[in-house]
Amino acid sequence: MIPCTDFIPAYSQLFKSLERLGGKAAVLDFWEYLSDNFLGNLKELVEAHGLRGCWLYWSHTLNEEAADFTMELDEEAGEFRIVMHACPSKGLLLNLEHVEPYRDYCEHCDVLYRRVLEPLGFECTVDMSECDRAQCSLTVRRRAPEARTRGTPLLATSD
Amino acid sequence: MAKEVMRRQASDNEYLHKDFHGALSTGIEYLDTHYGEQAVKDYLREFAVTFYAPLIREISERGLAALSDHFWQVYEREGGDAEIRLTEDELLINVPACPAVMHMRKNGYHVARRWVETTRTVNEALCEGTPFAAELVEYDEQTGRSRQRFYRRAR
Image: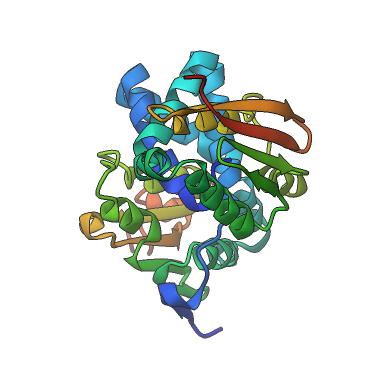
């Protein structure tokens, strides 16, 4: 049995194995498959509660993962944000002296969550510029009304 | 409503996210469907010999007691029952229900067809390069109930 506490190294190895079998395309294809087949609970929560669904989902996962984070929900402003001060998964991988993490390990978060949230009407912004230090951020915003996003003027002109 | 803020440090919680079993199961299912059974075994073997390299070295040095200690910790941490019997040349592990499988069944995660390899292949890999071998004597796919045996290879 592989305990759940050893999952992250197993996950990283899976990405490496997939890349060897089918290149980066295979890894990306798997991340999309995982998003479609494993993140049903995130999808259901956001469908039921809107942005608060993000808060509910990550309240569960980040606490069980013993992450060091700040999470903010501003429903009036239509924004949800996670600032990861120390990602337990990347931190674990960086601390393993005998295992080389998968090169693009952190990318999976962007692919997985974006694929769930964007079709539900949200924009995702991920900052991974500090992921080599196990730090990142995710911002989810309610998408502006369609007319605005297509460039329709907000105010009618006088002529 | 005012902005809500949650601030947590790592020390505020225990690291135990059992839903990871569901993610691993999804990965195994994907690998099996797209690349076949051998790819699943190759992946799990490579993971085990790499990640558990310090444990494998310890098995060579301390014998089956090192494996016994490892599995005590695993099942205790996961909250699963296991009967572990150790002699100098044999380690027997009887698991009435695998905590990973039970968590997945309870929470509606699909249990991969090759999930058994997370026990069989990983146990065999743990014995590579050591004087010991592994045998999965019994395994029930519905519950993950198993009888696992580690024994000294014939000299």
